[in-house]
Image 1 (cartoon, rainbow, N blue to C red):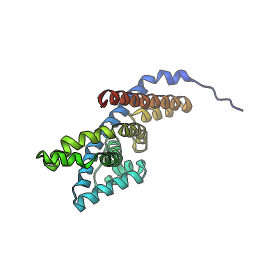
Image 2: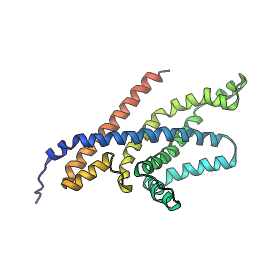
Image 3: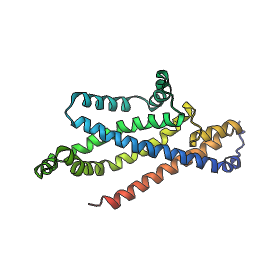
Length: 221
């Protein structure tokens, strides 16, 4: 027989703590996207450079990021680097792992966006006296970012959800970590994790809606 008694009052009393954890979750996700986007642009430039070593490095990064579990990437940042004497905190390990993953996916998004930009754009910029780097920076990259913006929004949502993997490396200040700690004390697993799931859902929907509104306002042409 089903005889579980719900005690939602315990979960709602802990809501301020969970919201504090949600702010840490957002902090990690935003930082990982900023770092990941910078790395993805660098990887894109490596692919365009014509240098076989840089191109191979970029391709290898993308292949590893896209074809191995994000959990493994976080483990390598936390435990793998520790084998070489590089010890990162749970926060830093989680940030490094997610940023690595973001860079791989965003680099592939940028590659797809570049294919949508006619080569005549670069030729026109070069005919005006721009160097290859100037043509990419002032002509190609703005269009690339515009095309890749909404797909990057999906990666932002994925980054928010990936932060929950931090509990596996001892992260206890984000939403998943706080929820885990509260559950360990109260044993009200369903209530706490159901409430955490709602918070994750709301954050993801708010980010998606905000991105669509921003895109509609900024990319009307």
